Picture 1 (cartoon, rainbow, N blue to C red):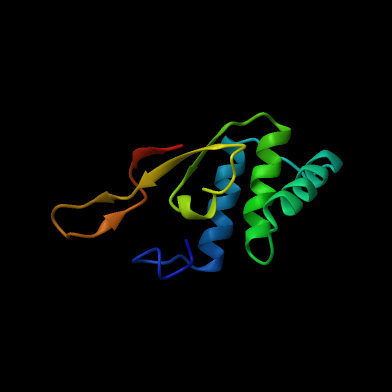
Picture 2 (picture 1 turned 180 degrees about the vertical axis):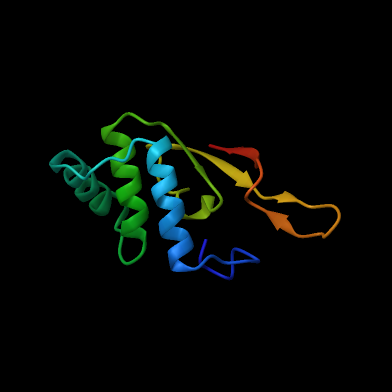
Amino acid sequence: MSRQEFYEKTLTSQEIADDIKKWEKSFNVIDETKDITANLNNLLVKYDLKGKKIHDANIVASMIKFSIPLLFTFNIRDFQAFEEIQIMELQPESDPESGSESINNHADIKTES
């Protein structure tokens, strides 16, 4: 939401923080546990991960811990290597009047397995 290469209009840090507070009311936010750390360590070794890939692996490690098989994402490339999960690619919806894409409206979903 703050990376210009992905979004036409990026949000400020304050807007992102405000959105997170709103989302916390609608979603269960989980804390890292020893089990998640163990899952992460297993994934690091299995896939020989380094750098930013570790953050993606931490998401997958949490999914494994809580038996969440499906990830919705705009960036499937970062998760394609993980055979432990299934991926659904979110597609920004195009605005026919402006020609721009929006993620604020519902997104089309494309399956990636």
